[in-house]
Length: 356
Image 1 (cartoon, one colour):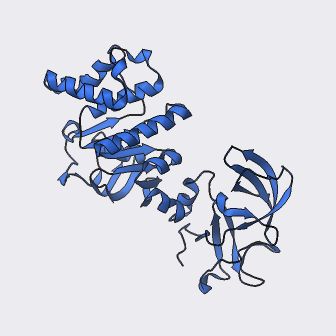
Image 2 (cartoon, helix red, strand yellow):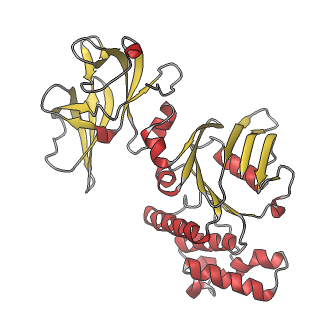
Image 3 (cartoon, one colour):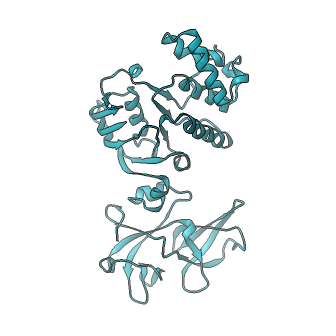
Protein backbone atom coordinates (compact mmCIF):
# COMPACT_ATOMS: atom_id res chain seq x y z
CA UNK A 1 0.00 0.00 0.00
CA UNK A 2 1.33 3.44 -0.91
CA UNK A 3 0.13 6.91 0.06
CA UNK A 4 1.60 9.70 -2.02
CA UNK A 5 0.92 13.23 -0.69
CA UNK A 6 -2.60 12.27 0.36
CA UNK A 7 -4.56 15.30 1.53
CA UNK A 8 -8.02 15.86 3.02
CA UNK A 9 -9.72 19.27 3.06
CA UNK A 10 -13.32 19.63 4.20
CA UNK A 11 -15.83 22.00 2.65
CA UNK A 12 -15.29 24.62 5.37
CA UNK A 13 -11.61 24.81 4.48
CA UNK A 14 -10.39 22.72 7.42
CA UNK A 15 -7.33 20.66 6.45
CA UNK A 16 -7.61 17.32 8.25
CA UNK A 17 -4.60 15.65 6.61
CA UNK A 18 -1.62 17.47 5.07
CA UNK A 19 0.07 15.51 2.27
CA UNK A 20 0.69 12.20 4.04
CA UNK A 21 3.25 10.05 2.22
CA UNK A 22 4.40 6.59 3.30
CA UNK A 23 4.46 2.97 2.12
CA UNK A 24 3.12 -0.06 3.98
CA UNK A 25 4.69 -3.38 2.99
CA UNK A 26 2.58 -6.46 2.29
CA UNK A 27 1.90 -8.24 5.57
CA UNK A 28 3.09 -5.34 7.73
CA UNK A 29 1.26 -4.06 10.83
CA UNK A 30 1.48 -0.28 10.90
CA UNK A 31 0.02 1.86 13.68
CA UNK A 32 -1.27 5.40 13.15
CA UNK A 33 -0.99 7.21 16.48
CA UNK A 34 -1.55 10.73 17.73
CA UNK A 35 -3.84 12.85 19.93
CA UNK A 36 -7.54 13.38 19.23
CA UNK A 37 -8.09 15.43 16.09
CA UNK A 38 -4.67 14.68 14.57
CA UNK A 39 -6.16 13.12 11.40
CA UNK A 40 -5.41 9.44 12.04
CA UNK A 41 -9.03 8.19 11.74
CA UNK A 42 -9.62 10.45 8.72
CA UNK A 43 -6.56 8.90 7.06
CA UNK A 44 -7.85 5.40 7.82
CA UNK A 45 -11.28 6.25 6.41
CA UNK A 46 -9.67 7.54 3.21
CA UNK A 47 -7.88 4.21 2.85
CA UNK A 48 -11.23 2.46 3.37
CA UNK A 49 -12.98 4.70 0.84
CA UNK A 50 -15.33 6.17 3.45
CA UNK A 51 -13.78 9.64 3.02
CA UNK A 52 -13.02 11.22 -0.34
CA UNK A 53 -9.36 11.98 -1.03
CA UNK A 54 -8.99 15.69 -1.83
CA UNK A 55 -5.54 15.39 -3.41
CA UNK A 56 -2.73 12.87 -3.73
CA UNK A 57 -2.80 9.20 -4.65
CA UNK A 58 -3.65 6.00 -2.76
CA UNK A 59 -2.44 2.71 -4.25
CA UNK A 60 -3.20 -0.77 -2.98
CA UNK A 61 -1.43 -3.62 -4.72
CA UNK A 62 -0.18 -1.13 -7.30
CA UNK A 63 -3.73 -0.08 -8.25
CA UNK A 64 -4.88 3.52 -7.80
CA UNK A 65 -7.82 3.46 -5.36
CA UNK A 66 -8.88 7.11 -5.19
CA UNK A 67 -12.19 6.57 -7.01
CA UNK A 68 -12.74 2.87 -6.25
CA UNK A 69 -15.87 2.08 -4.20
CA UNK A 70 -15.25 0.79 -0.64
CA UNK A 71 -16.74 -2.64 -1.38
CA UNK A 72 -14.30 -3.12 -4.27
CA UNK A 73 -11.09 -2.36 -2.30
CA UNK A 74 -10.70 -5.83 -0.71
CA UNK A 75 -10.54 -4.20 2.71
CA UNK A 76 -12.21 -5.11 6.00
CA UNK A 77 -12.63 -2.56 8.79
CA UNK A 78 -13.14 -2.95 12.54
CA UNK A 79 -14.65 0.12 14.19
CA UNK A 80 -14.39 1.54 17.70
CA UNK A 81 -18.00 0.55 18.37
CA UNK A 82 -18.74 -3.14 17.91
CA UNK A 83 -21.63 -2.38 15.52
CA UNK A 84 -23.07 -5.88 15.93
CA UNK A 85 -26.65 -6.72 14.96
CA UNK A 86 -28.37 -7.32 18.33
CA UNK A 87 -31.09 -9.61 16.92
CA UNK A 88 -28.56 -11.96 15.28
CA UNK A 89 -26.49 -14.68 16.89
CA UNK A 90 -22.71 -14.60 16.83
CA UNK A 91 -22.81 -16.96 13.84
CA UNK A 92 -25.30 -14.69 12.10
CA UNK A 93 -23.16 -11.63 12.69
CA UNK A 94 -20.07 -13.39 11.37
CA UNK A 95 -21.86 -14.65 8.28
CA UNK A 96 -23.91 -11.56 7.42
CA UNK A 97 -21.39 -9.79 5.19
CA UNK A 98 -20.59 -12.96 3.26
CA UNK A 99 -24.27 -13.73 2.66
CA UNK A 100 -24.83 -10.17 1.49
CA UNK A 101 -22.13 -10.69 -1.12
CA UNK A 102 -23.72 -13.93 -2.29
CA UNK A 103 -21.04 -16.31 -1.06
CA UNK A 104 -21.99 -20.03 -1.35
CA UNK A 105 -23.41 -21.56 1.81
CA UNK A 106 -20.57 -24.05 2.21
CA UNK A 107 -17.99 -21.29 1.87
CA UNK A 108 -19.82 -19.16 4.47
CA UNK A 109 -19.88 -22.06 6.94
CA UNK A 110 -16.18 -22.81 6.37
CA UNK A 111 -15.08 -19.22 6.93
CA UNK A 112 -17.30 -18.73 9.99
CA UNK A 113 -15.99 -21.93 11.58
CA UNK A 114 -12.38 -20.95 10.82
CA UNK A 115 -12.78 -17.45 12.29
CA UNK A 116 -14.60 -18.77 15.37
CA UNK A 117 -11.81 -21.28 16.03
CA UNK A 118 -9.11 -18.65 15.59
CA UNK A 119 -10.80 -16.26 18.04
CA UNK A 120 -12.08 -18.80 20.57
CA UNK A 121 -15.75 -18.21 19.72
CA UNK A 122 -16.80 -21.81 18.98
CA UNK A 123 -18.92 -22.15 22.12
CA UNK A 124 -20.65 -18.80 21.59
CA UNK A 125 -21.95 -19.07 18.03
CA UNK A 126 -25.55 -19.53 19.25
CA UNK A 127 -25.46 -16.50 21.59
CA UNK A 128 -26.60 -12.96 20.89
CA UNK A 129 -24.42 -9.87 21.54
CA UNK A 130 -26.31 -8.95 24.73
CA UNK A 131 -25.15 -12.24 26.27
CA UNK A 132 -21.46 -11.48 25.64
CA UNK A 133 -18.83 -9.49 27.51
CA UNK A 134 -17.17 -6.46 25.94
CA UNK A 135 -14.09 -8.47 25.03
CA UNK A 136 -16.18 -11.20 23.43
CA UNK A 137 -18.14 -8.66 21.39
CA UNK A 138 -14.91 -7.14 20.14
CA UNK A 139 -13.73 -10.60 19.10
CA UNK A 140 -16.96 -11.04 17.14
CA UNK A 141 -16.31 -7.70 15.44
CA UNK A 142 -12.81 -8.90 14.57
CA UNK A 143 -14.24 -12.20 13.33
CA UNK A 144 -16.71 -10.44 11.08
CA UNK A 145 -13.77 -8.72 9.38
CA UNK A 146 -11.73 -11.91 9.41
CA UNK A 147 -14.28 -14.00 7.48
CA UNK A 148 -13.93 -11.59 4.57
CA UNK A 149 -10.33 -12.80 4.09
CA UNK A 150 -9.35 -9.32 2.84
CA UNK A 151 -5.94 -8.17 1.64
CA UNK A 152 -5.95 -5.32 4.21
CA UNK A 153 -7.40 -5.01 7.73
CA UNK A 154 -8.19 -1.54 9.05
CA UNK A 155 -8.72 -1.22 12.81
CA UNK A 156 -10.03 2.10 14.17
CA UNK A 157 -9.49 2.35 17.96
CA UNK A 158 -10.75 -1.25 18.40
CA UNK A 159 -9.91 -1.46 22.12
CA UNK A 160 -11.04 1.92 23.43
CA UNK A 161 -14.31 0.57 24.88
CA UNK A 162 -12.60 -2.20 26.88
CA UNK A 163 -11.26 -2.10 30.43
CA UNK A 164 -7.51 -2.30 31.05
CA UNK A 165 -7.34 -6.09 31.47
CA UNK A 166 -9.42 -6.76 28.36
CA UNK A 167 -7.39 -4.24 26.35
CA UNK A 168 -4.23 -6.14 27.17
CA UNK A 169 -5.62 -9.57 26.32
CA UNK A 170 -7.33 -8.37 23.11
CA UNK A 171 -4.13 -6.58 22.01
CA UNK A 172 -2.36 -9.91 22.35
CA UNK A 173 -5.09 -11.67 20.34
CA UNK A 174 -4.75 -9.13 17.52
CA UNK A 175 -0.96 -9.64 17.49
CA UNK A 176 -1.39 -13.42 17.29
CA UNK A 177 -3.99 -12.99 14.57
CA UNK A 178 -1.57 -10.89 12.53
CA UNK A 179 1.19 -13.47 12.97
CA UNK A 180 -1.07 -16.29 11.79
CA UNK A 181 -2.58 -14.48 8.82
CA UNK A 182 0.34 -12.38 7.64
CA UNK A 183 -2.22 -9.89 6.31
CA UNK A 184 -1.50 -6.17 6.04
CA UNK A 185 -2.99 -4.30 9.02
CA UNK A 186 -3.38 -0.58 9.67
CA UNK A 187 -4.23 0.09 13.32
CA UNK A 188 -5.38 3.48 14.64
CA UNK A 189 -5.04 4.42 18.30
CA UNK A 190 -4.49 7.46 20.52
CA UNK A 191 -2.86 5.23 23.15
CA UNK A 192 0.93 5.36 22.85
CA UNK A 193 1.30 2.12 24.86
CA UNK A 194 -0.86 0.29 22.30
CA UNK A 195 1.19 1.84 19.52
CA UNK A 196 4.53 0.87 21.04
CA UNK A 197 3.50 -2.72 21.77
CA UNK A 198 1.62 -3.49 18.54
CA UNK A 199 3.26 -1.72 15.64
CA UNK A 200 6.08 -3.05 13.50
CA UNK A 201 6.29 0.58 12.43
CA UNK A 202 4.48 3.61 13.82
CA UNK A 203 3.27 6.70 11.97
CA UNK A 204 3.07 9.59 14.47
CA UNK A 205 0.65 12.36 13.49
CA UNK A 206 -0.11 15.77 14.95
CA UNK A 207 -2.28 18.50 13.46
CA UNK A 208 -2.86 16.41 10.33
CA UNK A 209 0.87 16.16 9.59
CA UNK A 210 3.12 13.11 9.73
CA UNK A 211 5.76 13.86 12.37
CA UNK A 212 7.86 10.70 12.14
CA UNK A 213 7.68 7.13 10.82
CA UNK A 214 9.87 4.41 12.33
CA UNK A 215 10.00 1.30 14.50
CA UNK A 216 8.78 1.70 18.10
CA UNK A 217 12.24 1.66 19.68
CA UNK A 218 13.76 3.95 17.05
CA UNK A 219 11.02 6.50 17.80
CA UNK A 220 11.64 6.13 21.53
CA UNK A 221 15.43 6.39 21.27
CA UNK A 222 15.65 9.07 18.56
CA UNK A 223 12.48 11.18 18.42
CA UNK A 224 12.54 13.60 15.48
CA UNK A 225 11.07 16.49 17.45
CA UNK A 226 9.71 17.57 20.80
CA UNK A 227 6.17 16.43 19.97
CA UNK A 228 7.25 12.83 19.31
CA UNK A 229 9.55 12.92 22.35
CA UNK A 230 6.72 14.00 24.63
CA UNK A 231 3.98 11.86 23.11
CA UNK A 232 5.75 8.48 23.14
CA UNK A 233 6.82 7.25 26.53
CA UNK A 234 5.03 6.90 29.86
CA UNK A 235 5.81 8.90 31.91
CA UNK A 236 6.69 11.48 29.27
CA UNK A 237 10.23 12.66 28.64
CA UNK A 238 11.52 15.34 31.00
CA UNK A 239 12.22 18.61 29.19
CA UNK A 240 14.54 21.35 30.43
CA UNK A 241 15.31 24.62 28.63
CA UNK A 242 18.54 26.53 28.99
CA UNK A 243 21.92 27.41 27.51
CA UNK A 244 24.80 24.96 27.11
CA UNK A 245 27.90 26.09 29.00
CA UNK A 246 31.37 24.54 29.17
CA UNK A 247 32.74 26.63 32.05
CA UNK A 248 33.13 24.60 35.28
CA UNK A 249 32.28 21.47 33.33
CA UNK A 250 29.60 20.94 30.70
CA UNK A 251 26.17 21.91 32.03
CA UNK A 252 22.81 23.30 30.96
CA UNK A 253 22.36 26.73 32.52
CA UNK A 254 18.63 26.94 33.30
CA UNK A 255 18.85 30.23 35.23
CA UNK A 256 21.62 32.41 36.68
CA UNK A 257 23.38 30.27 39.27
CA UNK A 258 21.31 27.16 38.44
CA UNK A 259 22.16 24.38 36.06
CA UNK A 260 21.99 20.72 35.14
CA UNK A 261 25.43 19.03 35.22
CA UNK A 262 26.12 17.03 32.05
CA UNK A 263 29.49 15.52 32.99
CA UNK A 264 30.49 12.78 30.55
CA UNK A 265 28.29 14.04 27.72
CA UNK A 266 29.81 15.07 24.39
CA UNK A 267 28.31 17.87 22.32
CA UNK A 268 29.59 19.65 19.20
CA UNK A 269 31.59 22.82 19.86
CA UNK A 270 29.01 24.78 17.82
CA UNK A 271 26.31 24.01 20.40
CA UNK A 272 28.11 25.74 23.25
CA UNK A 273 26.70 29.06 24.44
CA UNK A 274 23.45 28.50 22.54
CA UNK A 275 19.93 27.90 23.80
CA UNK A 276 18.74 24.30 23.57
CA UNK A 277 16.01 22.07 24.91
CA UNK A 278 17.36 19.08 26.83
CA UNK A 279 15.26 15.90 26.93
CA UNK A 280 15.82 13.14 29.49
CA UNK A 281 13.72 9.99 29.84
CA UNK A 282 12.59 9.30 33.44
CA UNK A 283 14.65 6.08 33.58
CA UNK A 284 17.78 8.07 32.61
CA UNK A 285 17.48 10.61 35.46
CA UNK A 286 19.45 8.79 38.17
CA UNK A 287 20.33 9.44 41.85
CA UNK A 288 23.93 10.45 42.64
CA UNK A 289 25.87 11.13 45.82
CA UNK A 290 28.04 13.92 44.40
CA UNK A 291 27.45 16.80 42.03
CA UNK A 292 23.95 16.65 40.58
CA UNK A 293 20.62 18.30 40.05
CA UNK A 294 19.11 19.32 43.39
CA UNK A 295 15.41 18.41 43.48
CA UNK A 296 12.66 17.99 46.04
CA UNK A 297 10.49 14.86 46.09
CA UNK A 298 6.78 15.68 45.89
CA UNK A 299 5.10 12.31 45.29
CA UNK A 300 6.36 8.70 45.32
CA UNK A 301 4.42 6.15 43.26
CA UNK A 302 5.56 2.57 43.86
CA UNK A 303 3.89 0.27 41.33
CA UNK A 304 5.54 -3.06 42.07
CA UNK A 305 8.47 -3.60 39.73
CA UNK A 306 9.32 0.12 39.57
CA UNK A 307 8.66 3.44 41.24
CA UNK A 308 8.04 6.95 39.92
CA UNK A 309 9.40 9.95 41.78
CA UNK A 310 7.56 13.18 40.99
CA UNK A 311 10.02 15.98 41.60
CA UNK A 312 10.28 19.74 41.78
CA UNK A 313 13.34 21.51 40.35
CA UNK A 314 13.10 25.27 40.85
CA UNK A 315 9.40 25.21 40.06
CA UNK A 316 9.68 22.74 37.15
CA UNK A 317 8.12 19.29 37.42
CA UNK A 318 10.30 16.26 36.63
CA UNK A 319 9.84 12.49 36.90
CA UNK A 320 12.42 9.82 37.67
CA UNK A 321 11.79 6.08 37.24
CA UNK A 322 13.72 3.88 39.69
CA UNK A 323 13.85 0.38 41.09
CA UNK A 324 11.51 0.20 44.12
CA UNK A 325 14.21 -0.06 46.80
CA UNK A 326 15.38 2.49 49.39
CA UNK A 327 13.02 5.13 48.06
CA UNK A 328 13.04 8.68 49.44
CA UNK A 329 9.97 10.13 51.13
CA UNK A 330 7.87 13.08 49.97
CA UNK A 331 9.58 16.30 51.04
CA UNK A 332 13.09 14.84 50.86
CA UNK A 333 15.79 16.64 48.92
CA UNK A 334 17.85 14.43 46.61
CA UNK A 335 20.42 14.82 43.84
CA UNK A 336 19.98 13.40 40.35
CA UNK A 337 22.11 13.38 37.22
CA UNK A 338 21.05 12.64 33.63
CA UNK A 339 22.74 9.63 32.04
CA UNK A 340 25.24 11.37 29.70
CA UNK A 341 24.85 8.61 27.08
CA UNK A 342 21.08 9.03 26.78
CA UNK A 343 20.52 12.76 26.32
CA UNK A 344 18.31 14.35 23.66
CA UNK A 345 18.81 17.89 22.35
CA UNK A 346 16.20 19.90 20.46
CA UNK A 347 16.03 23.31 18.80
CA UNK A 348 14.03 25.68 21.05
CA UNK A 349 12.55 27.49 18.03
CA UNK A 350 11.06 24.69 15.89
CA UNK A 351 11.40 21.73 18.27
CA UNK A 352 13.43 19.64 15.83
CA UNK A 353 16.06 17.21 17.09
CA UNK A 354 19.59 18.55 16.96
CA UNK A 355 21.92 16.13 15.19
CA UNK A 356 25.55 15.95 16.33
